[in-house]
Length: 93
Image (cartoon, rainbow, N blue to C red; front, side):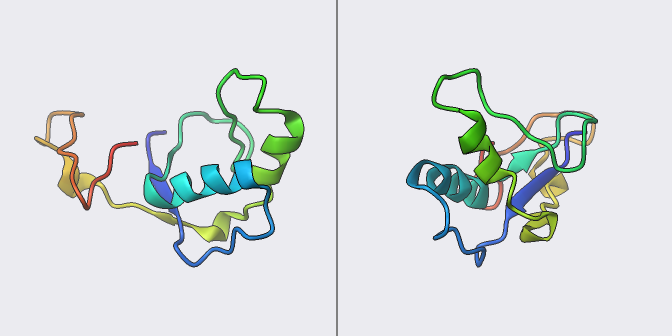
């Protein structure tokens, strides 16, 4: 819970629809944060009619090995804080 992963820069997104490519590019820049104990690499989007099952199913095709763990401890403001010091190496989620 709370681990950040970023889609590797070299992952080819050309086989995805344009809306899916937009989300995948965001995953490359900002990453994703593990927020549930559900199925392996299961994720969901916002409650929005544009996030259809077909759309989300495309994103589910991305294999786990296409992500890299982000070591974000250097982004913390203090060891006893959950606050982050956002910047080039620590982009906002």
